[in-house]
Image 1 (cartoon, rainbow, N blue to C red):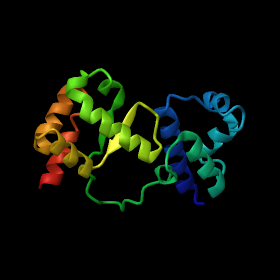
Image 2 (cartoon, one colour):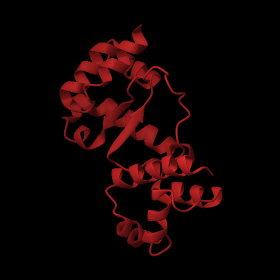
Image 3 (tube, rainbow, N blue to C red):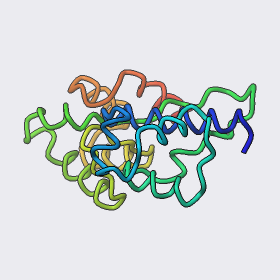
Length: 166
């Protein structure tokens, strides 16, 4: 594994760990010593090569697909991809049920299908947004504005929807 690739892989590992609010020692505690802080830290710095087997086990521990840990293959000079549509599940829990009920049920279904229960955020696809727009009887752009006003979607989602509509 090249040193640059190892560093990029390590950066992805660190990003996932910090998104889950874990310190290196927190990983060791949560894994009951299976993942030593010093080892995970060396993976994150790119100082130590990680085997495919160990990477799969670490992905399982974090509850993410292995491909989420792999560095991107976007060629240099490529146009910036549209922002992802990421639902803030913590804020969604505070939106009144009569407004957010369909979205909460839809998000729960996606979490169940993916086995993704981090409970903080959930990435959705453009197709999911279109489906939700039908459920809410609104256009995707109007629904996006509604979700932004609830604090469930980041304002960057406007760019993703605009990119899709062009």
